[in-house]
Image (cartoon, rainbow, N blue to C red; front, top):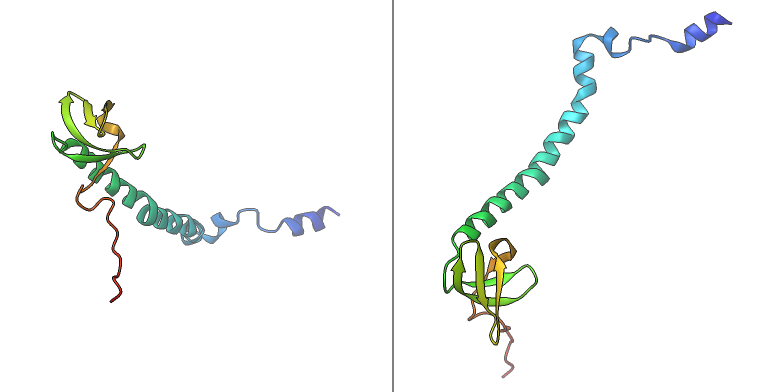
Amino acid sequence: MLTSIAYAAGNAGGAAAQGPMGAFASLMPLLIMFAVFYFLLIRPQQKRNKEHKAMIESLGKGSYVMTSAGFLGRIVDIEGDILVIDLGETKVRMPRGFVSGLYDPKTVGKTETAEKK
């Protein structure tokens, strides 16, 4: 009975008995998955964060911005890290971090339509 259990257990060493190449081969799928995640997820996100940080640092008076809440306005004053944004009839104060992007006021609200003749 004990010999059948020992025979069923087989080689308990597994990767150690295969040598160093066997251990490397068992780690290869993990390394490939890490490389795929790095190049498809981590690296592009770092690039976007770097571009967003550069955009936030370059903000100045008169810049047309879109906030993370979706408001469109023009920066009228900068008080350190706080921006005063003119939304039309009202002005709001918010931190720089809430600016999600810049926009061109000439192109907002215009849609291209094909005129039929």
